[in-house]
Length: 304
Image (cartoon, rainbow, N blue to C red; front, side, top):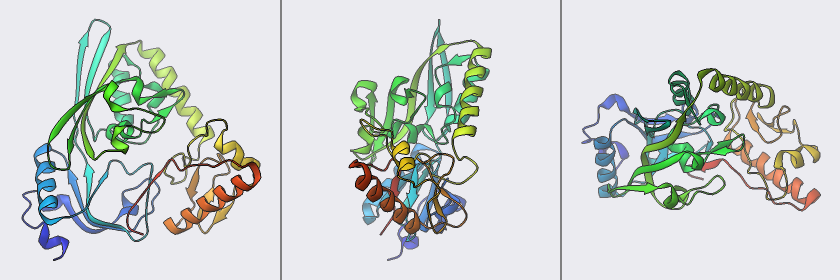
């Protein structure tokens, strides 16, 4: 039985369901084969309904946010790909302490702008990360010595059987580019952040500073999945790639950025196969030269 007939009875509007949808349209890398079915979810009831149907029909589920930090394979994604579009921003003020409850599908950049307008500080360092709140929590995204773990108070989520759960910061097992959501199957639905009252001019100055840094130091003019590799325990990965003579090295349209060696960019019509071949070349070269093992930061999604 095909996926279309398996999910035909979903009450979700047909405009939110796409079949054989090229994922290059939905990832910041602009790479990826077709999702067998792509469903855009903007409320909890729809999410629960999809999970129920998926369980009944034994359909695999893949979760996507803004499509950053991922490489979708050329063969695409089987089953149901859920794009989490849960949007909500509620601000509660108590003296200088501020609590913001955010839907998992809200983008960090949009939230940072709202914080700026409301003179709320604590999100400036993360304002340039091109992902959703849910994705940022899942991978404990960070920049400029600040990580999501520093501002998350609680996280609401749902397991693949449709059961809701709430975690406190201490229960989230935050680590470098990791959290409990990397190890266990939960879908993040809502995040509550603990922030503080600030001064608009200072907040804007910091956001502008980080935006300038990003523009000067990172290849944001090309599609990429963000920083390709994790930093090492005792080394800077991009520095080793640079010293290995790999800056600008390319396989097809996948290239080690000449601006920042920690980024693999899509120069035009790169395939996932080319990116993975380049990743292996980088890993092998760095290990042979420095005896250091480097690890991917981006997640690989889809069928091989």
